[in-house]
Image (cartoon, rainbow, N blue to C red; front, side):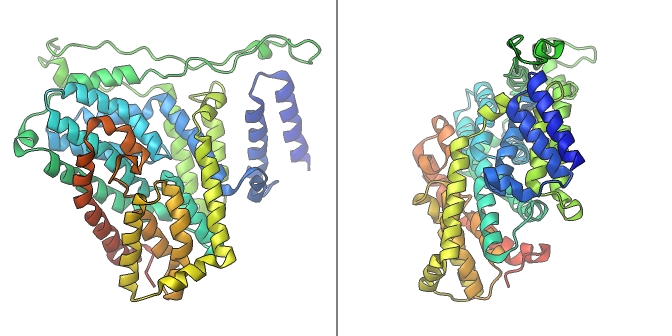
Length: 488
């Protein structure tokens, strides 16, 4: 009781006497009460389900990480170490895989990667086949590596929510990481090899790569945060207590980073090497904002992974991290700016499709549909679910919508066949990440549409679709049972 009064009193004081965003203060107060156990995590249901809050907080975290320049530094640092086209393709794949842990949206990751691709395309403008291959590779890897983490796509959260509704047990963040990372790593690098095989020649792959200066230029240009202003006071308010205090006039702003001087490739250095060869070894130290973003993301990830020990719900950990990364002076962006980056239509759509999927399960409609589809052997049912999930993007373009339609049917199918519903649902969700056939199949594919021709997607899809299906099938049969997700 005393703690509640203290938190409420502090919130009122902050509302009245500081220029802090009102919503930020309210959420901070709620987060404090949640962390101290005064409020149960179910209290968040008043403003939306736990899944919605988790994704909302993850988007705010992603906005803070992006504003810090950490993701761009990571991408360009990796790309700058490539010596050949094959090496570049695999380093790009690795960088895009790592971005799945920072940005909880495939379209957001694609938008973040687009400037990096533009810098590479400019440096490789005389090698059109390589540029086209990279234009196909970027969205392909982004889509297939989302499976690495529970927050990699809204469809994953929908699957988890529907599993909890139907069976009482979902797939936690740590378990999803254990299951998804191996598949994501293999998919990323196998996709890189397939793209190189389909779109480049042996001569392209053997020719030395020289894009060092272009990559460095990309680093310099994109390390400057886009945000230069934040919450500002509008001066004293007549009749409002404390509004004329020095705190009320304080303004918070993010600091612009001065780009380091760009050396030319011909400029000699003390050790006799050129700047083009030595800049890789002179990576600037992490800035304060980058350290803040990295620390907050690692802390939130650690809280998600250790949930079985401390029992703090994932949405509460994510909300706490979102507040830290937007806190004045401490954070890397402002609360208002971060919320402006949240794709609200996606959140509403995800909440609606989750409700539809829940209705299918609770009303018995999913059981009826599963009964018509019949059963079969375990492996045949697994292969059928994977095949339908792979092809579903041709009919249902939204990844979240595919999960809300498929998972409510997959779960009763698994139960009727005596299989593990979590295993079949996870396989379906992983396979549904393939959506490469048409430009309209996924937003990341559309974002890179200027870099390739439509027939290139058909060419890739003809090879990548069966390969992806075989990978998911092999993982479900040979790997996931040893990681705690058996088929039976």
